[in-house]
Image 1: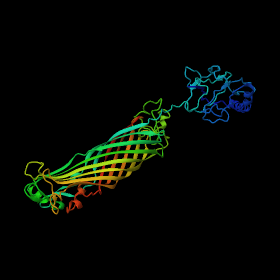
Image 2 (image 1 turned 90 degrees about the vertical axis):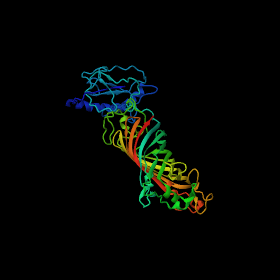
Image 3 (image 1 turned 120 degrees about the vertical axis):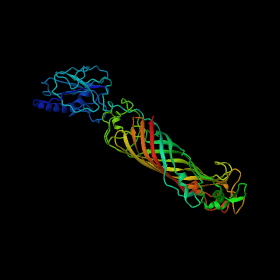
Image 4 (image 1 turned 180 degrees about the vertical axis):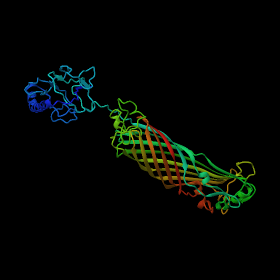
Length: 539
């Protein structure tokens, strides 16, 4: 750390106004004459002349015609007698010798001490990151020399500021979302003989579960871009709705069951009549599994978002956790440049403190899988519980969506650590959908009444490729716990359109297997919403 002279803040006596004018005149003369003197007294590589500034500050001693932000050379200040040629209280300035290692006179303490001077170096203080203007006192006859302690190339304000370490290129996180399904399917699945509703499709399609996701990625091009990947797996609990025959009868009011028959060993009978006459219990059940993966290339626009590592010598965190930085402000108690790195996801942002808004956009590829297994089971064999000889009407659907998506997110910084975000994404996908369905049990298979057993067996699978879309909306907040850790909370809305849902696959009639039994109806949808909690890390 270099030392610079410090001056008292006492008021300048009026008798010294003439001295100040004389100093200014001498300074002008030095500007004119010092290049000439330098050319006469030095050989080889010479230092340029120096001028005395009008105020004390970061540019206190700068080479002529040089920008104020360059590193400065040390200069020697002399205090001539009051009767010097330059007038009373004049200051003579001359460039140093060419020899970098020249031994310079040691500073001597003035008659009066300097402001905040440390005991180890009387008369001097450590150079601040930004020097405050100082008011000079009349110089004495004692010489005063500024001597660098490490590097004679002197200092600029950049050299005295702590710098950030290289950016932390990797980021990741985990999250848990409490999901609930939106919408209700009113398709009637079970009723009494008198027509009273007992079960609808909404009773087995209503989800209420916790889903998990994980994210990992890396910043590219010094943090201007980021490549991130997200994995998620959601497994709602099986939805079941069982109804026992209490004497009012049980009817599955699907007209399609009147078109198919089955022989379970007691003769051919329609499936509709078999359930109505023999069912002691009827249970509707649905199993769902949701998986997915996405890879997105993000670019940071308005506000910037280049990520930095921890700030030296600040340490791991920029500012105490208990301190509130204020709206749109940065923690002034944190060492620079940490104070200018407002918090955000995965680490501090390299952007100015006066910017509160940040915009991120991305493009990517996504895979989304929706599997469902739906069945209506009727206990018709007279035995307690469901067994292999009972009657089952089963649908299995599998949707594999592959496609492109794009999205954006706006973040508003409330302080150094807290930010609000709102964003969303939308994608267009090719849905490779397959449907399997079956009516019967392990010993018998139902068949269409028109075609008969064998040719008209109601069992099979079909597939097709359809257009599907996925849209997401995210609203939440993020709190940066420290440089690396960020906690998030928010609301999420997910909508999937153009998928095959089991209940939607139930045809209105079974004339022939080829026409109706295995056709694909991929015009259903899935809508979920919930509260998400997450924890993110940058390394």
